[in-house]
Image 1: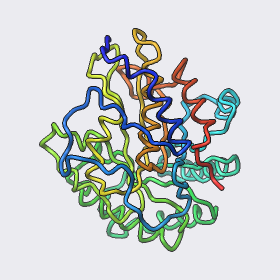
Image 2: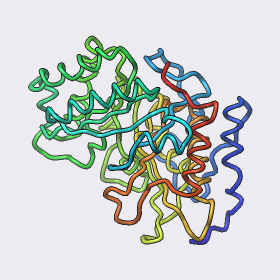
Image 3: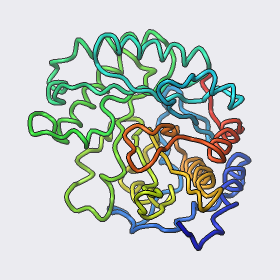
Length: 331
């Protein structure tokens, strides 16, 4: 892929540095941006001030981390990175075995200075959660997480748009499920940050078949998003900067603090360094807009057009940023 605007290179690192030092920082270069989404043509530079929540990072900081590919040792990777992850993203199923693994993962992460961001994706209808049919399961999990007495991020059914079904899995059912979770977490696990995580494509301004507002949960302290640069050598799709895609979304979130549950970019062998700069620019955008956390999807799972796994100069850029002063870490 040939990109004429090579001036993109070299700018992102400076943006991140300026964010860490509190200096004025450029807007993330929209580059090859698409149109801005409704409902607003502009996005606020920082979230609207709101009441604090457990684990909220200080201004100018955010939690920075990744998921770890299956079969790769987290400890060994952290030795290569010369730092523990500030945030560790992991995924689980709702059976007893994996629910136990979720608790163990949170315990291990917290004991090693990582903020856990854990997801569980139940197979039951969302409407059953909303009407209380699974309160016992939910309460047991929340009470166990609450006993950890430490902030962590919990997502119930990330990317729900993939699993819509007329039998209890409509957007209204999803929102009602999240509201019941928030209500029960408030008393059982007050330090748990409930983060509903949606997909960028729901907010794509070129789509006319979906109303993003139907999926939003305004009662949550934070709102989450998964977002990717779609380009790969195999598919030849448009190269998109992180900022150009986020600008299509931010107006919908009404200044809520953001959690990036997944994000990714593939290496471009014909443009050495470009993907690493994409990664730096993504972090710069997150810092400028007051994001709570960003977790890189370090995997090739379900990625037929090419892996998202960090390697080479991208992994080096990730390592450098992970060791930056702007990275928030659990107290």
